[in-house]
Length: 257
Image (cartoon, rainbow, N blue to C red):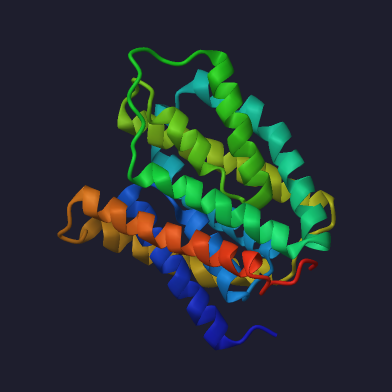
């Protein structure tokens, strides 16, 4: 039975993750997954379902008005690389969730730490748009992370923000890729019979917090420079990743789930 206090804490975590995402354009899934792994409120497979649901809800709101700005060719190429790897990543998650909790925490912690570096070191822009193989490759990396933890963002953010494309085109294209990755991943969960019955309750608890946080961050952003905000988000992610990895290295987390 999920208690009211647990739902309230989860809503607060979703609020913070959405606030950081709105201000920096990055890190919602990583922050929320890291926080849930640290609090142990939700098992990681169930947490990934919740993140997929919240990502999809956010995407519907964004794309309702912005779908015309999607860059079709990069979108399709990235999806072609991503979707098979979503299935592969989900298979790895299922295997590790049943056999090795420590390996799962190590992978998530390492992914968070590496991804946090994107907040303090932005990719250099390219003179011309990348070719198809590059979008396939980074789509595959994003798909693998999306299948594992429903956090497909880092490789795709790195790839798309280097492109000579308007910011709104990059944003809408990424949101569309994340949305379809989430739909595909949720379909895999349902087809495998792995749907967790509490996932929808967690998502419903987090959705109002995400909506309110997004509105507040857009309406009244803090009086801080973009560099300061990105550094603060980097510190949050770095601490989250280290906190996940350190107990495993020190032997404080059981090797098996």
